[in-house]
Length: 393
Ligand code: AOF
Ligand code: ZN
Image 1 (spheres, helix red, strand yellow):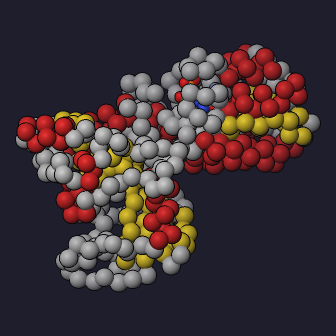
Image 2: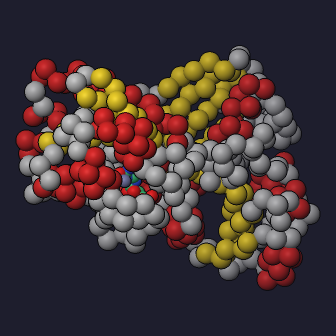
Image 3: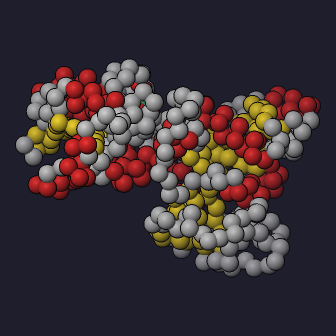
């Protein structure tokens, strides 16, 4: 990246008269990128808009994993009008041969005159080389337009590429007084039907749903997406001691919908064999919490998984939080009160001693869903590229 000309930094270098126009078109490219959500992962969502003399001449987005990239779809839609156009791309165009050819080459061949990108791609084979490549072909190249907006939709991808682990979304529903179940363990239902419907839509965008053995013993959940959506999420149960039953709903459906059980050497061999016979895949990791979680996350990342939803009890959510592994919270607050010293809150574990700046840096999103309130809070991160990571994807 260092050899890339400074004048191409859009924020400081782009002429004022182009700024507003650039931002408007880039916002459209980012909007288009979202069409790929749940379909392109582990690839990034990317959108591209081609504009000539202020007129939109083509647009496209990366629509499915293995399919053409955003730039290619935009170039196809523009036909010969791509010649002399400006391409607005929400991520640095790739310059490598992956499942598809390099987009830089396609942009050059189409005769694009100017490329405005929102963000560099930290993918090891790109990382600034896409910009250099365009520049070398005499294309005016800018980077940094609407960078923050683009980052918002790229965070799960960035987490995989830069940190070598999937993006973890912890979801729960709680009462006004912060309880996720009554003293008897009853939790059906704290949130309203519309909120629960939304959860199923999120599941259908996820690679897997993570839960703990406690939740399986207590609720015997299915953890499927109903109705089905773009993705069939696998179910992952964290069960270090080996407690879940081969007669649980998860195990009984393991032949149709993948079930992974992450356990440790502590668990019994016969228990593992019985579960394996249901069709579940058994993964064995070290039993100490930090190595257990880290090896599991590394394994799931290598499977090409990007978005994981955590739907678990206080023990597991608390442990993941203590290990600093949760990236996003999606919390439904229902206007009801449960009360009781024995009714549980969403997180056990050690918890944070404060001050609580970690989650306060980003603007939380607050939305009303029926009578419930939905609060989304995302971890702020600069996503520094760690160079010695193994390659993923
Ligand atoms: C782009 N435009 O629309 C996307 C890009 O295996 P492939 O060929 O699909 O390449 C995947 C990599 O390409 C991915 O990791 C990321 O670096 C880049 N994604 N690049 O120019 C796009 N989706
Ligand atoms: Zn590409």
